[in-house]
Image (cartoon, rainbow, N blue to C red; front, top):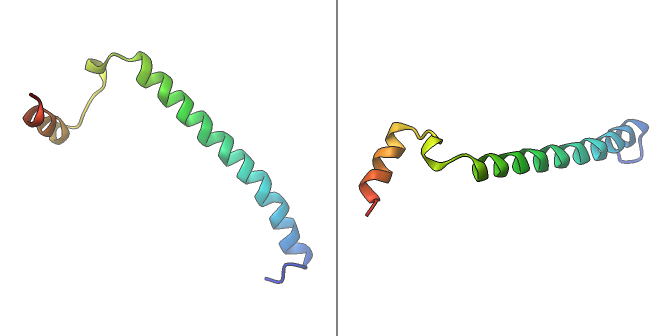
Amino acid sequence: MDPDTPISSAFAAYGMQWAAVGTLLAFTMVAISVLILRYVPPDEVPFPSSLQEIIDSVSL
């Protein structure tokens, strides 16, 4: 698209707003995940059985 057309200008303006919303959403998701991982005891976090077998075999 030609950058000087009104259509591309409108998409660029909305694109920047959505980029800000996406950044805020990503930050919020990471912050919530960190809080969950910080306060949930490690024994209560479920692992897939295949991953649990690997962890058990590597544990000392």
